[in-house]
Length: 398
Image (cartoon, rainbow, N blue to C red; front, side, top):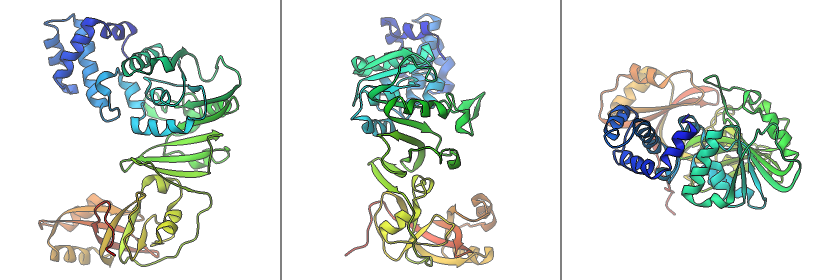
């Protein structure tokens, strides 16, 4: 974490000049020493090192922030920061509340998104992160909508706040390891429950890998968010921000699927089209809800694949055309893939103990055509499905 004096140095005229020169080099981490030596020809050593580090972080931050080249970062704070599209999507839910408290604001990614819909009181126990927040709010414009406060979310200096909202993004690493339980978060999830009684609505970010049994007793909505096919986070919504029990959201969009009790849907064989649900849909326990929505069946009650004899475009699943379905036998699968001239192979699996890399090595394919194989269960029996990915947005004619 950079010292406060280092951050302030970067905000001076010489600091901005050094940072501009450092950024022009488009540096990667391995370029740090060479870049510092180059910058030291014009700037003091401390400023050269700070500018080089910041330029490297800005390059990395582009994966999360559209305006990363104007922002200020620290390594750990950047790793914990929410991707901008997710933060903006979440912030929209707070539009009816004011002010909104960002209780663990970090470098300000969530606070800046929240400031687009409401005045924000952004607190943290780390002075450096508050400086990062202030610098970023000033650089991007909404500084007049964001009030930084040094405060601990577990011992807030505020009482009950009628009409207000709050957002909590607790730290999920302890001593270098990822916290497994919500009780190991910093602050623990219990702090969110305390805050839920102080404000009209609260959102709490948690790991998408959370043990659902740990949050089952809370009177809240749980939402799983997929950004670009990757499960990014889960959010618990309390108070007036709770709308349903379970929600899966796919970004960009947003596209959202909700449910309470899962419907019953039929079992069917692996014909026509195979649907691989978004990880958000799977974690939210909404696979059968999706199946009912698109008129699909399940291959197996325990497996999160759907099948249909017709192609339906949906943002909640990746579609594959099933070319062949083979009861799994290594020799038979190898022979068929060789007949098809398959070489480069993508292997997906669900409900199979076989590791993709082990299968690829055992098959020993030497063809030139790319192929995709899905290892799964069909009504309790192991199958290999030879499939072709369907281009996004495709649908059956007529």
